[in-house]
Length: 240
Ligand SMILES: *Cc1c(COP(=O)(O)O)cnc(C)c1O
Image 1 (cartoon, protein in one colour):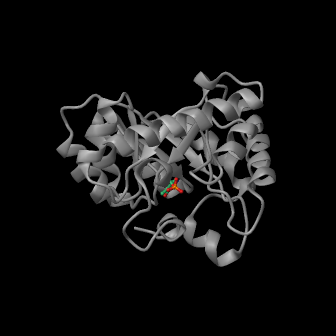
Image 2: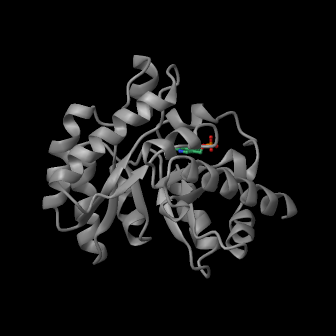
């Protein structure tokens, strides 16, 4: 608990410093606590310290953990690869889905949002390139396909287009990659002004992401510690 409190303070200080360094208001950058692999008790502890947004990358873990802290006023975000048959449950939870990267998933979530009676907030995941095998497994739409996907989401009554998301390529400096993402986000916003969110930056590269304009940073390790399972970037790339 003391550890979590110190970590939360340190991460917030990094966010503040990075925002100020690029002339931005720190209040424009939301912290998403990625609690994957960590118990619901840690979510509860961080929520008691004021943290409101939590992220998971596996639907089953998300649903189980959300049920355990169902009494808390928190918003869940899904940051992993989503199977279409889990779309309805994720929609019912009111989770923000950061990883819409293809038409079939958008259509499944659209139906789920209509059935749930409230549109699903979605971000489009962009593939920023890098070693072919690694990015293919990690997901993300090719940059050239993002605007067509944005139009589809915008036309879907069960979806609300909120912005773009990406994971930095493993084999490249994150700064230029996040700049490409931000330029694409500008083009999407020209057609869809409501797509204001840019979900980019993790424990290791949140400063670069904030410099490029991130409005949501997704932080796991720097808050909770090293994950006990063999994962980190592997977990980012595992499709479940
Ligand atoms: C796990 C994960 C994060 C958090 O990564 P850390 O390096 O632990 O901060 C962010 N985004 C996605 C998509 C993840 O799967």
